[in-house]
Image 1 (tube, rainbow, N blue to C red):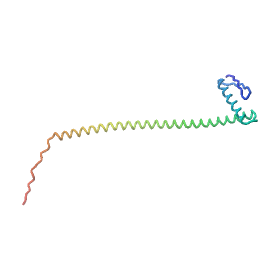
Image 2: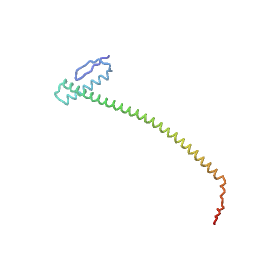
Image 3: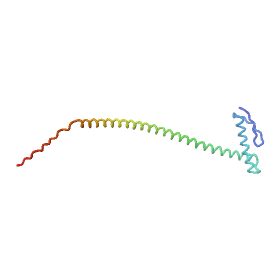
Image 4: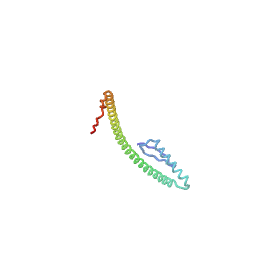
Length: 143
């Protein structure tokens, strides 16, 4: 633990902290600025009143920031759930596409076989002599 001296509204405070000195002095400078600004905006306000009002403003800011952080956490959780659902859908769609690709390959193969079979049958029918037709007309018998 280290000791850090800070000046807020003309008073020196000695703080025991785990944080580094630059961070703590930066916080104190920001607080000093806000108290001084409150006092400038509200002439005749005592340092104690300005410090209390500044503390109230900072408490409000912290509360709102915590609410915002909670909302962001909830949004992040929802986005993570949506992303997980999307990954599941992508996997399903990939499997469906793969099944369709396989079916397409099979159909192309079947089509190629049918085309070859038709060509063979057509070639066979063109190379076979046509059966002879009986040109003799049937005889009519009259009584």
